Image 1: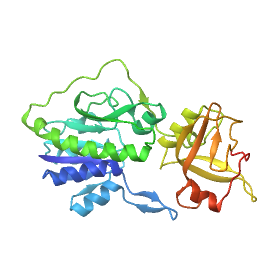
Image 2: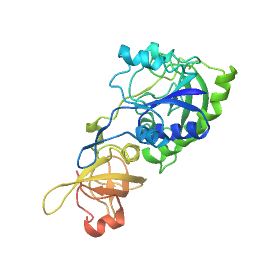
Image 3: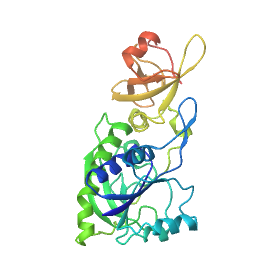
Image 4: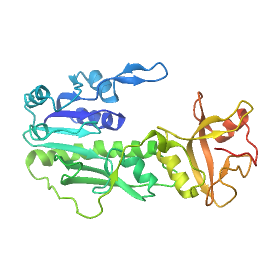
Length: 308
């Protein structure tokens, strides 16, 4: 098939790689423009742009797909279909309907649960046991289109946003490659989403990343894992030079109790409003991620200390 691909982060790049490997003609790859990244805040291309350039695919990075000139340029591609995965812009109807067979989105949840920007993180934060990825024919409503195919996966007790992302990205890549032939020959069945069970996965805001040890351990643990590795749930640890900011990247619940924020042993067991959370992997500000025992060798925290 002759396709356009629209996506930006690594999740989307995995899909683009699978489409190219399957032999589809990628007429153009659309991505968000290069953005400041890293310590130097230099402009760097997205994962999709970098991959497309390596594949020799034309890359377009429009500021807005609602620009009439961009809409006309997209229509001129003469596409069979468009595949979208975490592109980062709302697409107008003229774009969605330009390809001969329509436009299809790979969404990282089991719709209608977790429509919106952050379905992977929100599923973990909510304590969902099952999630997945779906191929949806796109409409102008937010993730409201009919579903053509789905793949489900369990959310395990030590899953993070990162591990679940990688698993769903691989599933999405396999799913779209398997689904496109039925779209091409007209045998794909598009099933409308149920009217019940709709939830929205709002974008993760920076203020959400601060941990509140007064919350129940189950909630604290889920937030830590959901926001790992990015943006990273964080707390402050005491030091001789004042509070130090530390990201919590992996944790597990334990049956213990104490004043919220108090360390219950010298191995990063932190009391919560109900129960306790053991921090398994952390990242001190300005340092790389470390397992708890390695972190504690350079930054010891004794039982009775209080983290913020």
